[in-house]
Amino acid sequence: MTGKEFEKAFRELQTKYFSENKEAETAFKRIRRGAGLQSDVYAITKALGETAERALIETLGDAEIIDIDVFVNYVIENVLTSNYSVSAAFADVVQKGMNEAAGTGLEVKAVALKKSRIDTAKEQFKTVTNTAGIVTTTNGTIATTLQRGLDDFIKANGDVLEGAGLEPVYERIWDGVTGTHDTKHTDYCNTLAGVYKKSQVPRRFYERHERCNCMFNIYPDGKTRERLTVLRKGEKDVNNELWISQQPKSNSRKAVLRRRREQYGAEEARKMLNEEWKGGLNGLAERHFT
Image 1 (cartoon, rainbow, N blue to C red):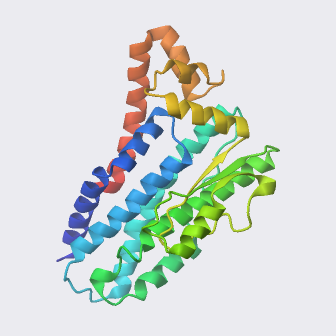
Image 2: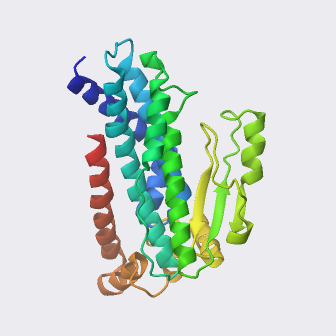
Image 3: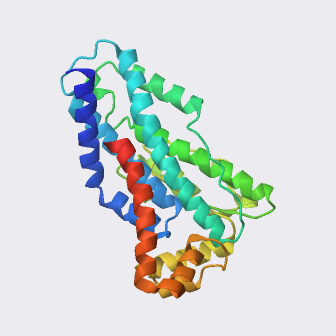
């Protein structure tokens, strides 16, 4: 199998597996509607990582990799970093929306996948000699590295909010799934899960073990958290009356929708907004998965 054949087969498989992930699809739709939270970004990130691992294993099969360094570099540069850029773009959209909902006017701090994260992933890949076992359900290098990269994003934007004099609220969500945890890790994650103000954040708040499925949310303030939680429970559509009525009268996407609705009518306003977001996010997916 040539390099180009390998890449084509891998991309086709990852696209297929990703499109079959219902949790990621639901999260994708929430973000498109403007109702996403960082936990939705983690759902997409997890799906990107896990489907990449599955596609790599299936594509490799019994093929022999002559130069392990070349293969590891390919995975890092063309799989891990490109998947992270997709996740980071979603995270950027979500945090901007949350900042607008809180009326902060703050820009999101973009964070690249740290060199230390990449170097660690490289070392983890190199320790595996069996090509089909480079990524396995018990290793999870790609998924865990992607999640840790988003943890860096959360921390960086928490610093931005605190630096502006706000009191952001931090949330760690444990999925309650014990299948990827031994007893020690189940207790570990369950203990750290919760909602905290800055002064209450546990020292080990951002720590995660391998294959850890915990997710993080960051809210500019407590009221934003309460408002977004209520809206997500009741929201069915981007044109939902409750959702629109709750948005601040600022230059946000929601306020734009309100103004367009008054000017063009509900149906036309919805079409316009959907077309704008469809092109942006679908284009993003196409760049990475085709």
